[in-house]
Image (cartoon, rainbow, N blue to C red; front, side, top):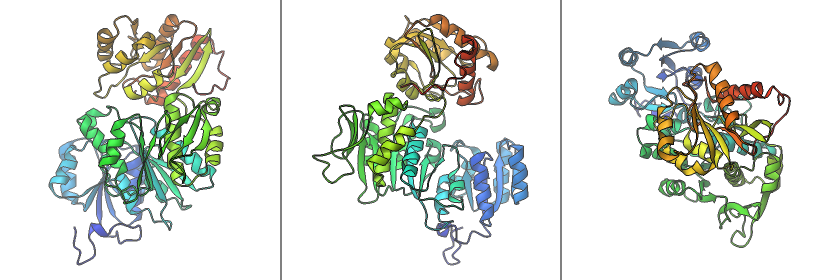
Length: 504
């Protein structure tokens, strides 16, 4: 597999234009990412076998048309046999498959290289000519918003920029787009980072670190290590959170390209090489010559409020995005203009209704305690709709920290016991109302009714579940839509036609 004499070693496969023909690759998974990997490899002339627990019918049919083979079914023994019989040169693993998956363990034991889709994309990034620069973004929360912000800022400056990766469009699709790009803004999950070993981005950011996906990574330390990979081999700017010391530690530990700078962002007054806030003005003290004595104005908190971007955790995302954009010389005036027209995605602190002095806010994207903490911190008095799949994370610390903001709690989720127990231990004085109904179509109807009974004028009814949604809903968006529909039904549809800005 690494015969340097014949020139067929895998180390030489670092370009779209390398000789990939005659290689064999096993792709694990046939979701959006797995299909993109299989499609890419087949186009390169590689013989592809896809192994998947479940394969969507449309993707399975198209794979067959393209000339790939499929082994479907979740039997580990059958999957491992397929690996042995196919004897691939390398394996490409879709995000989400645990590193200890039997097929991956068998591949590692046999010495078969295992690549993630991100490294495969890095290898073939030159398909359309001069490769785009990459800006890589991770963090427990805020990744998607920051990725979209950076992309908007670059596009406002006339750059051909695309958001891709964990945000929805696979990086492999982006690098194969015939139009080509100047910059790819790549959102990276901890799953993708676990496998990443080659990428050398122009700039990188880890927005924050809090316990999440511990059931996948096995420990907080392993999760932290995966997140830290975002900074490896960065060429120009490593952007970290001044209010999260772990992110600075990750920068210090990273092996970066000589000359790369550490750039901090935070909600306080910035020091040299930082972005921050002075008297309500967002300032850049990093990307100017006189940074020890001067600062560049980017925008104001007042302007962000008008755009629905003034919640503290969103302001932090804006500062991080601005730092990444400034590393690519986007002028402050362009950043300001881009922010004026930017709007948050649905289900991110989105006001869905307001009636009788009570605001109803959908932050269904708050799928872990860290995100819910930021959301709760934006409002002084909350009726909190919470619960779902906790992914191995204890919610008790969050409840204890935010108890003074809680008017009441409405607990959803198929497994409510850990949440109810956490309230009993850390907030015994907060009224807690479990939603016993488990049918998807009934959960939010009951939750909204209970929340309305508990709320007082001036309160916010906040859906920020601190948990994943797949126990009762298809995904966080389905959960958010169900909440909004239940609220409209409860209030008689009076706010159906209003265009509510995000909370802030």
